[in-house]
Length: 69
Image 1 (cartoon, rainbow, N blue to C red):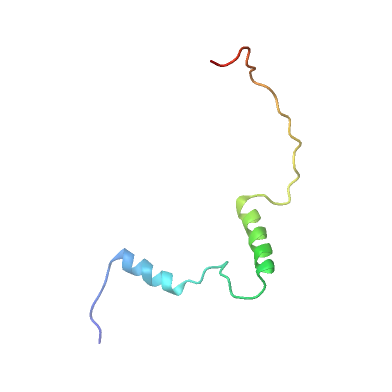
Image 2: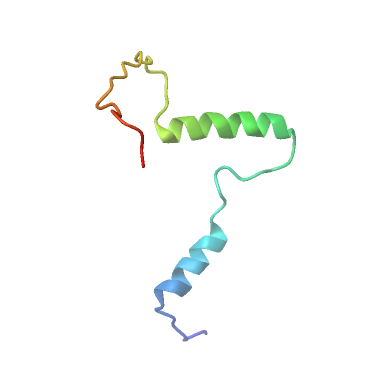
C-alpha cells in the first residue's frame, strides 16, 4: 500500500492537466475544416455573434489649427 501523500497544489494541477484534453485540439483531418471550426469558436468566444452591426457615426473632437513643431 502506498502511504505517500503529496499535498502540493502544483502537483495536483499537473496531474489534472495530464488528464485534460484540449477542446480545440487538432485530431487530424482537413486543416481547412479545422480552421473554419476554430474561426467560428473564436468569433463566439470574443462576442462577435449574430447581432446587427451598427453603422459608424464618427465625429471630430478637435482639429489641429497650426503645424506641429
